[in-house]
Amino acid sequence: HLSKYDNRHIQFFNEQVVNEVHKKLNLEIELRKALQRNEFVLFYQPQLSVKTGEMIGMEALIRWIHPEKGMVPPNDFIPLAEELKLIESIGRWVIKEACEQTMLLFERTRLPLTVSVNLSPIQFENESIVSDIQSILEETGLPARYLDLEITESAIVNYQRSSTLLKGIKSLGVQISLDDFGAGYSSLSHLKNLTIDRLKIDRSFLKDIPEKDDTILSSIILLGHHLQLIVLAEGAETKDHLEFLKKRDCDQVQGYYLSKPIPFAEIEEYVKNYQSQHISRTS
Ligand code: C2E
Ligand code: MG
Ligand code: MG
Ligand code: MG
Image (cartoon, rainbow, N blue to C red; front, side):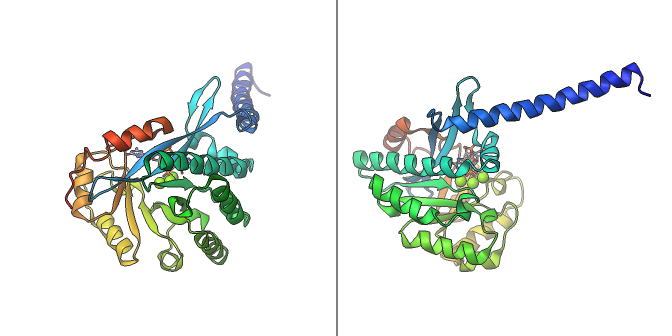
């Protein structure tokens, strides 16, 4: 039979498991209430033209302002929201909020800025996404061309279905970006046939530039251009990164070097004062 020591050991292990289950359960209860309690906010990260340094758009990134924990990043709750199927209602809120705020910005600045919204693969499974987007555009008045939806390759599980859904979304006049391109599973043959407008290259490819070999990154930029896609590089953190992207004719850039994601209230100031300070105008 078990000695006293073994008993304690087992009990300790069980407590840990119980604690973790408890923590997740609490998070689940709180996440279920977060939407009605208005605990979500969108931050926006500027996207700039590499050539001119002008801001061309921004990516909406969700944050959960938890009453005790403070700001919770999306990677800490989006997977749970997907598991609990809460992502559909959270995702719809994100699209609506992003369109509303972008419309406000447009009314104030008259600048043609697009807003990129991340779509979970689960939202992309439901055909009602097309009519949802359509009614949000009607309600907010945002011209469809100013909305860009970011999907990842993992959303394209069933090529036929995805292709039909993408066409439906495209027919609204909305743009489509393929997010985190090159990370994980990529099917290059699908890339050619799907109706997408833009490739967002995963930030892992820029990380070791200029120290490491840049063959893959340079080739992805060329590949995108050969497919008539706009190419955006994610995760530019240094001047070297930016210089490299310029040299390789990458179209657009997003990254901490240009701006971290910021609250909506700070976007207008960014457009006015900071957009081109890191990129000299060359044309
Ligand atoms: P993502 O769509 O690839 O978004 C880019 C992430 O990279 C953001 O993290 C951004 O803050 C971060 N980032 C941007 N520039 C740099 C850089 O120069 N260096 C580094 N190290 N990181 C950079 P964030 O906001 O934590 O979001 C993480 C992921 O959560 C997003 O990755 C996206 O997949 C997901 N996410 C965010 N908002 C939403 C949403 O509203 N709905 C869904 N379904 N997913 C979302
Ligand atoms: Mg994204
Ligand atoms: Mg990304
Ligand atoms: Mg991502």
